[in-house]
Every structure is written in C-alpha cells, then in structure tokens.
Image (cartoon, rainbow, N blue to C red; front, side, top):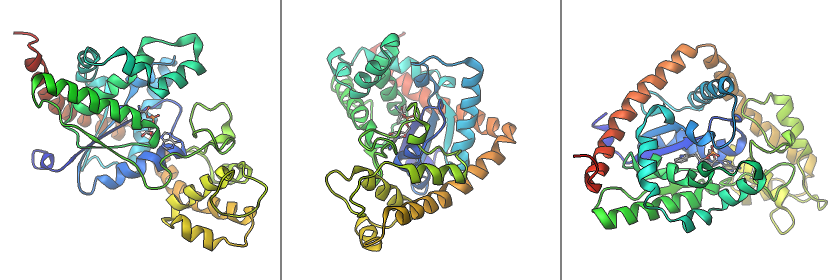
Amino acid sequence: MSSDIKKPIVFSGIQPTGGFQLGNLLGALKNWELLQRENFCIYSIVDLHSITVRNDPEELKLKITEAAAMLLALGVSPEKSILFIQSQVSSHAELSWILSCYTQFGELSRMTQFKDKSSKNPENVNAGLFTYPVLMAADILLYNTDLVPVGDDQRQHIEITRVIANRFNNIYGDVFKIPEGVYPKVASRVMSLADPKAKMSKSDPNKNARIMMTDENDAIRKKVRRAVTDSDNQIRRGIGKEGIENLMEIYSACTNKSLDCIESEFAGKNYGEFKNQVADALISLIEPLREKYKELMKDKKYVFSVLKTGKEKAMEISEVMMKRVNEAIGLGL
Ligand code: TYM
C-alpha cells in the first residue's frame, strides 16, 4: 500500500439507497473503473449521506450489500483499490463536525442540491440535509485526495470542499490537499428519459424516467423506446432537442463515438432506428455488469470480506489525517 500511495489519490463516494441508475454509471462509475489504472483509488459507500431521508433499517443493510456487489461488478478491484462503508470509519463523522465550524451558513444555503431536495421534501428538511456537503468535504479531505470522479451535479460540492480546505489551510498551514473534480466529457449529466430538462435520478417517482443497472434487457429497450423526444425526426443537437441530445450522449458514452460522428451516422434515419441502436448499446454495456452483479450477490461472504479489508485500510489512512487535524487545531492534549 505504501508504494501505491505515491500515485495520485482518487476518492469518490456513492449513496447506497435506491439502487444505481444509468446516470451514476456514465457520470461517475465508469471513471471509477478507469482511474484505477494509474492512481491509488479509495471508494466509499456513503451510507451516512443516505440517512438524510428515512430508511427501513433492514432494507438499508441490504442496499449497502447490493451497492458493494454492484461496484465490484462494475470493476472496482479490491486488489488495486480500497472499497469501504463510510459509517464504519468514524473519522468521517468526526472531521465533518470540525469542518462544519469552518463552513459558513450562507455558503451552505446557496447549495442548489439543498434547495432542490428541501423543496421536494418540505416535511423533513433536517440539519443533515443542510450540512451534507460538509460531510462530503470530510470524506474527500481525509485521504489527501487529488482527484474526485463525479457527475456534473456534484460540481458545487467539490467547489465548497476546496473553499473549506483553503480556509482551514490559511489558518493552520498546509494540512489538506486541494482536490479537483474529474467529469466525463460526455454524459456528465444524464437526463431523465421522461423529462429531458430534469436530471435522471433514482428518486424520480416515474420508473420509466431512468434505466437501472439491474434492469433486464426488455425493460431497457422499452424505456429507451418510450423516451421523450421531439417531432422533428432528425438525429442532431439543437434548441428544443434535449431529449435526442440526451440519447446521443448516452449512445456516445456507450460506444465511444463522438457526437459529430453520431450525427453523420444517423443522417436520414428516423428516431425508431436510432432508439433501437441506443438500446442495443445500452444492453451490451449493462447486461454483463448485471449478470456479474447477480453472481456476486450469491457470494455475500466475499463481498463482506472485501468491505472488511477496505474498512481496515481506510481507518489506517484516515486516522493519520485526523491526528494531524486535531494537532493543528489544538484539540486534546
Ligand atoms: P450520488 O450517490 O447521488 O451519485 C453518485 C454519483 O453519480 C453521479 N450522478 C450522475 N451523473 C450524471 N448524470 C446523472 N443523472 C447522475 N446522477 C448521479 C453523481 O454526480 C455522483 O458522482 N454527494 C454524493 C456522494 C458523495 C461523494 C463523496 C462523492 C458523498 N461523499 C465524496 C464524491 C466524493 C452523491 O450524493 O452522489
């Protein structure tokens, strides 16, 4: 591990609740897998972030196991990387409290995700929802992180992490490394299939709006066929063509073909033909991952053993940073 740590450090997290959807895969998880080639990667199932909404305890446990199995199926390698559950490494909650004392109320009030989530759930606007970005900053800063692979919706959270780290460093010296976000070139914001002006999300009540990583091939094809487009019947980018553009980005991310190349490939073809190709590309991508996931869910012992090793390694690294932070501030004796 010590030689690996000389490589650039990558950290990222994903919430376990609700299962993984296509946006998670194309916006972030594809990069999680790719970045393992040249970096030392630390990936976390961020269950503490999930409890800003109410969960059934048994279901939450199952979702955490499923998330771990899916991440392994997607290519997170226990040989190369660390995979662990956030709540099992107590430094995360500890550093989060400390950093909240270096974060301004006004800064958190400006977070669009907070505004969005609190307006959608007015009956449970808890303090955890408000301080959520501080916990995320703690996750990242604990590991001397250089790079954070995330989708476009996390930009503001990466930015506030940098603001908090810089503020802390200005007071106490160079304690934290200043991390940078890594975003995919296409499909950094996968949009809903039912409303191309809204982000694809696992919390959308309309199940046809998203493709889940566990969807069977028929379901994938049906959802793509139903995807909202426009009446112009031309496969190209442009104003009022958000639905087609979203499908083009998805197709591009699945096939590595550029958007220009896709426009020429489908010139003169109709939406039905294009949607069939998009569905085929998605099925080729998702089917092997889904089947690997099913196999891994039959071997939970293996999944738990990966998480246990991950927890030990994450504790070892994060405790060094916790000690440094406490000493810098003058906590304890
Ligand atoms: P979460 O669990 O909502 O999503 C996990 C990752 O998937 C990306 N994503 C998308 N990308 C493109 N299009 C979409 N429609 C889409 N939906 C989700 C997200 O950008 C994210 O990268 N706060 C984070 C989790 C987190 C974290 C961290 C991330 C906690 N601590 C530390 C990085 C570093 C979140 O809720 O992601």
